[in-house]
Length: 296
Ligand code: PMP
Figure 1 (cartoon, rainbow, N blue to C red):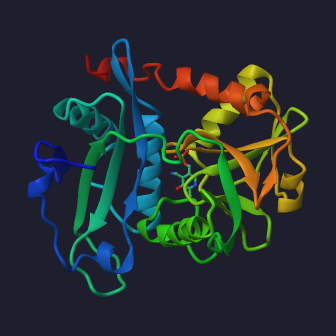
Figure 2 (cartoon, rainbow, N blue to C red):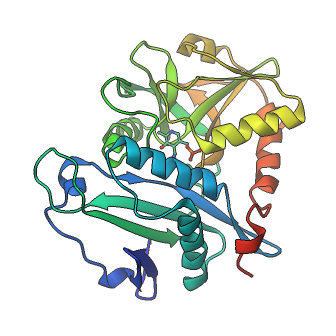
């Protein structure tokens, strides 16, 4: 699904076949989860394709690396160039790009100097599908922000996401909505959360979430459309009274939510602010931000 015998990946400065890539069995990332990554989408357009918000994603990769004491051996511009070259080499235009920064052999709990950079790409449908989602409030909380850097995209953090999604699926739901340590709504396992009430959008502030690039894009687009967005803490009870809700993330894009714990939203998605923003988002992602770098 992610690669075949022709797939080319970038690994530590070389272009190699995915099927021939090797990694060490003692690397710190595999044993302890200390590694950082990104999830980026490229969209086909009339000129070739656009790697959407490439700069923002690689800046976050750099930020996450710094927080985890990892020296990223490439500049943002180099990483942007690698992402376009990766698409070119794999003849991909609409694609998901996965940069992963992982560490070499180190069984201690100290940071390690051996840093590896992988970049792979594959075709990926909307992560949460096209249908409105049946969501459950997870029994798992988002991690305490004093236990780790929740705002960084760290490999090990995703055990929390996997537990939440696995629980939701097992109980017959499509996805989980996680609360923070204070019981306020935080986010989905791989996407940020918005709800709409009387034309105003509400989303949790930074602090207990990964403040997503899609979330920031939605907020910018909302400004353009004259839709008010309020960032504040809120409880799940407030969400039950909402007209609509949706998840926003690179892989999920904008995914409408049908119900939470079986409580259906009463508003029509087609007539919601979220839907208007979704339509604008679809256009925005194709716009060339890096004209000079766009492959043709
Ligand atoms: N929260 C979590 C936990 C995520 O994994 C993601 C996906 N990166 C997001 C939010 C959304 O972030 P973005 O819009 O930058 O993809």
